[in-house]
Image 1 (cartoon, rainbow, N blue to C red):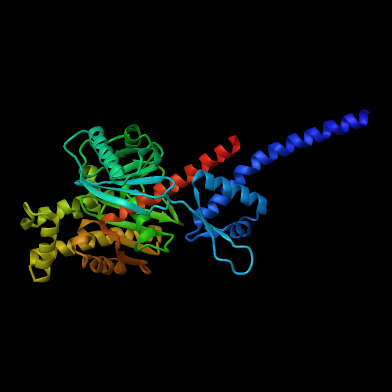
Image 2: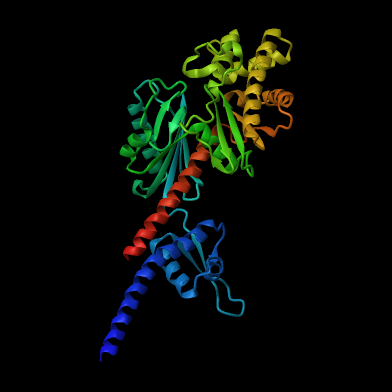
Length: 413
């Protein structure tokens, strides 16, 4: 009898351990199945899930049925028979939840709503209300985004993540614009993530806009296939976004890429250029406009084009401005190239958008400095680059949160 009692007790322990083991494995297995589903651009079958994950047919069947019930995966029904049992196709439901991207510019803000793959559903450009405090500006942007959600017929409670891009030094961990935001008066220590989350009721990630631009160019633009590259923008401000081995590089204090502060010569070492820095003070749009008298009261897309046309036509003053600008930006690009050794540098921003021939001039300067420079190309996404980057980062954040929610739910189920 003692042996029987001992045997019963041991079997009960085995059952308890097995149950705990199953509770531990189920969320891990669910994560594997969901990761496979998200990665597929075309419909797939349970057989393909089994082959990719190495899980048993019953386990895959149970987990796929759970994901279909949750609405994360769509059951597309059976395919035509080829003589045997008809396979059932499924696909990841990218519109199970939604994400949003915000690109805050000095005069215009770009907004977009997208699905869980980052594919845009609707976009909008609104004026940046710079004549108010940062909190009021952000509240207005949040209201504009809610309107865009409504117009897109996306319920606010189905928004899973928002990524906001802003100029200046951004502490991504705290979601704060620390300093150096060109043309945004009073933008120092602005808690963007906290303010927008309070207005939108959804987690918000904040990133430097040029960092998002290089992410966007790697996803849909000129930097596709490049794991170590940089994006240099010249417009209202000057900055760079840097990717090293496929990852954004922020630096110890989130200052990586702040090339506006780059000192352009020993004669400038003791000069205080303020928040704009040496390079931006010498080669930014404001500096160029100050030298080109015909820029008075003219929009950027007017006077920049006039300047370069005048230089081409033989105007010596215009030629000197263009040559000096190309030299300064070329030196900065060469320095980035020497330090980073990227396979590609993308040039973007308002200056290059209006004067694409400047890219060739910058290439020539870089080639005289760097022995083996990487490719230097114009942006393919232009003003949309940061917005594309925000949508990709938002989709990645949303999918991460979705997977975490499902893991927690399946344990409790």
